[in-house]
Image (cartoon, rainbow, N blue to C red; front, side, top):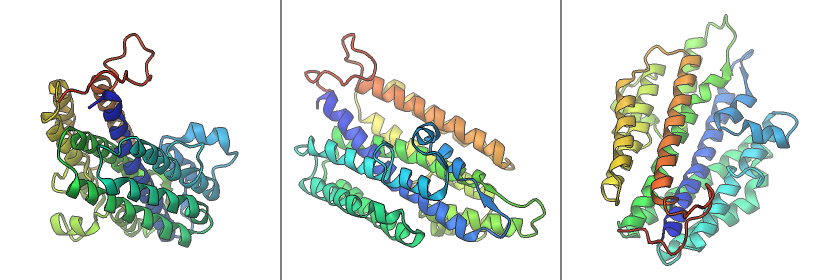
Length: 328
């Protein structure tokens, strides 16, 4: 496989996962808003910071209100991480890889793009429409994952798709976990504990994790246990540690991957050792920021090893030379 094709596969997987998880992040925010009591506020600017898009947002919007942020995250193509942009980029990458992917893959992703193109603006008008459209995006994404897992040969191309999906999923799980730092309760609220339970329940629901959490951990939703579950429970496929474990498994089947295996294993082991019990919102936010930076470092090492290693003096970020084959 050519390094260029491998990079396109990797980013196709990341874009699709990012679109789904941005939809999950927005739905989680909507659930939180519905549960807020009188006097509690939600920092909309914090949501953009959690997504890592605050600088770009400020360049294009004068005020960080709900309507502007929803447009920016859902339909604004000036934002390369908006849901519409992500599906559009994934569609373009898929179009160039039709000989590698199942034939139905192009049709599924193209259908998702056409649906979003026609409905993204509707999703920004009201919370009810937004919830329906974003749930459809999530369901369409599930169908695409099933198509890849059920009909694609589990070769190098498949491993690259898994790498992109799991790295993006781990990163977005930390960002959804960080959402609770954007909620400010009145200091004298007697319902603080009950409200926090509802918000953590919304976090679990946004990751389709609520029933699994209740079955594997506890019938009661407690903040420390939810954080531990979403970070460290290897039994749940959206936990950060599980995603890193999946990446380790992929690297064992990839060429020249010993250093990458070690990086993924070391990060997974650090997460397993670093318990988060008792962390306040600020400390948890700082911890999740560090974790996102470490995941970014793993991405940089991966892309340098497989996609950019063959630049013959080319500037950083330039596409790999097409005559270099991605060895199997």
